[in-house]
Length: 414
Image (cartoon, rainbow, N blue to C red):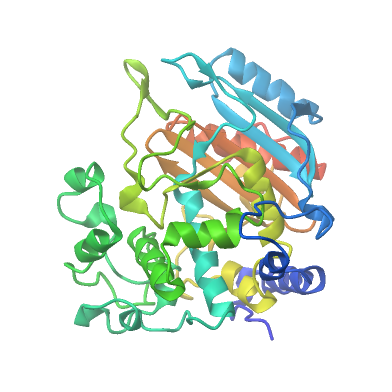
């Protein structure tokens, strides 16, 4: 019934356990939650599933070690952003540090909107799988069934390849004139035309290579299969029924109340105002808040959005069997817009619980959203400083470790 990995080294027991939990606990789907609601309804009732009752939006500091670390970092201007840790929908820690906009002296609120960057990819992967659950497409469809005109060299590319980083289509940064493309607004049709100009870097499925273009093309296919724009589809199917009122796409550059992104350069903290997320429509254009992402994690990982077999496919490893390790560590499982790995093994002292996660970095933002399925622990770290990669990873694992009752990590392991 479940699509279990064929590679024993990739922890198939975890995927079976998660998919089984989704089957047992996921008797309610978002489609059913739609059924008795008017089109204007935007909140999933707690009566439908108590796990989705939104917690009160207030500062919470029940993790003393994390609090002490973040207070010290903030005092030394070493971290700016927002951090949430929750077990189920019980928030253990929620606080912000620094400013949403230093030039305008705008402080963070607990519901400040951050650009998600590549954390957005999972929404595209889930949209494809939901359309598959509805019988409107299959991940095994050739992309040329949905994209016309279609380059002959894409004949062997399947939707599966687009959302697993295995298509062989060159990524945005590998295309000519990336510097100009990066700052120029693009429509989905223009993104498609740009991608179609190039040959494949490898045969589909032969390698795994991180790729934004595949998710842009997948968003285009979502639009074709659903009969509406990609942005309207994910709003209708995900954000509105989950009450994620502060989540959406900034593909048209018209979203209010977004935090400013920054970079740490020799001249100091420098604003990065030109996001132009239109060039990453399906790969990195979304924005959200800490609590909206908590609701998403709880719904997604507890069987409320996808059928169990689709959820198992979402998180299983789709990389080729001969994929090498990453910097001496076992490589992460490449799911459909989401990763799985033991992130706690990258800190010291380490811990081994597998986590389902994704990072995000674009235009002054650095994020990590992760989920530990056994205890239903969500950790959200959103920073509006692009150059805080190591700090964001360490903070996320400190929050996870303290929530799990593990020794508190003090450093990244190298």
